[in-house]
Image (cartoon, rainbow, N blue to C red; front, top):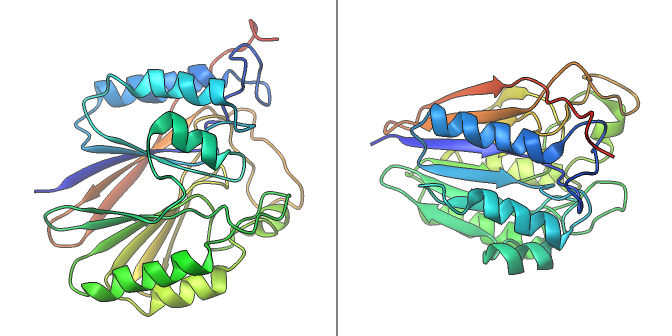
Length: 258
């Protein structure tokens, strides 16, 4: 059977839901994404790829957990550079700081934590211990197709400011991916824009934020104010092939926010 995955990323929920994030209502944007998924299923799994709270707020994580609790499918939380991994783990009940492996009939999904060695500016890395564990996971079964999910991008997006805060050990990571042909796709968030590039046997995907989008190919941070929230759908086929699309939704008005 095929595996239907939805990805929502970079929610940037504030501690107070009435506080705007870069001029938008981040909570309402997440709600839009979840309502769209409810109306356009089926979904087997939802993966949230980091920066779920803008300041690692427990209140934000609790609100997010409340939004997800009645969904008819599992929800996987991953941390980003804006998150507090410890608090996220406590609220979600998930080992968000560890390598997690989910096995399905025809696919293996690997969840990574890229918040090690944070540079204070937004960058992060996969720890050396997790890199070793990832290599072991990929080497254990070279036949089953693998999909990797994480927060930071391992491929430059040609925006100077964003490429300065990508995965810190991206060269080592990409060398590991290149050495294992069973890795079919690497999916991330962080860059607040759509990205799709095939490098060797692996497809590297980045997904728009549920909050705001960043303009492409910029030297400094610039928000594409006309764009609303986005999310990604992935269909993992039995034969190891992937179908994917990005769904964009209308921007929510924020006149009521502080």
